[in-house]
Length: 387
Picture 1 (cartoon, rainbow, N blue to C red):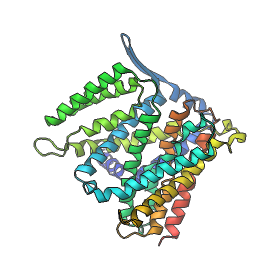
Picture 2: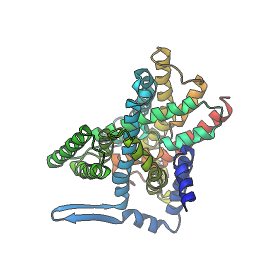
Picture 3: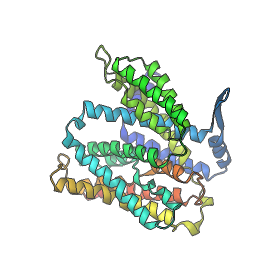
Picture 4: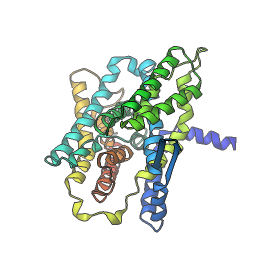
């Protein structure tokens, strides 16, 4: 049993396996939703779970517990990685930040511009401008690794670094543009929770249970405030101390402890819950609507063009340099893979349009189609044209 758990823990550190697991649960969701089990699948996601204490009530479908709760833990881990990189990693050197930051910026601006141009004049459809700006790192990294050993390790680091800024960009977009009515009382409670974690950090207190309670209060208050709850994850990560007073790597210990749950529970469950597109409900007349075309072109074309263009300009103007032992052809191959939006794009789609079937699922289909095209085209290009 211990050997089995050890093997699972080892697999949770394998980025390629994480991507394969996501592919499996994506296909499983599509299969289940388009079979006689679709009723059970939908009932599973619609299952109401909640708590009620006097006037306080938190009652949500299981789908929203996944998208608001479990994904906040994922963003918490992203925040831990970001803090570690800035304090102890490559991002201590400002020059190492410029290339992935520029790439991430291009990967947000160009897809958003393409979507906006396709949907210009329609205020409602324009709400989805951020859908093609996200990259699903686990998928992209898995395909990059499977492309072959001739791909230099520095490009994997580049993709991971780009992904950090891409995820931070997604969090900021969600917080700024997809926030509903704001609650002053909830903001006050959130501020108190943040202040408490600041004091804990300054006093170098490293009791996990104390941080858990503070983060839980923060999550609930952010959720009730009108700002998306995923922001609570990244804020909590900022206040986690790097080390205990005895010198033990406290932040690293938490991050390592969560990797298993992220790889085997949170991301697969998120993919399974969000990828179940009922193909029979798709309105063929809407396949070439502005929303579906904007999403497809934004992800498949806009991401690769934006990431590569901004990376090339940073290198051309000597603000940065190519990742070690790589060339522009290989860099472009990685840029193609950033068009795999998948889980994060589905997530933002749900925030933008709220009612998932408003476009008869052609928006979800466009995300899946663009992601699969980016993955397949990127793999073929990297495998056969960059040696």
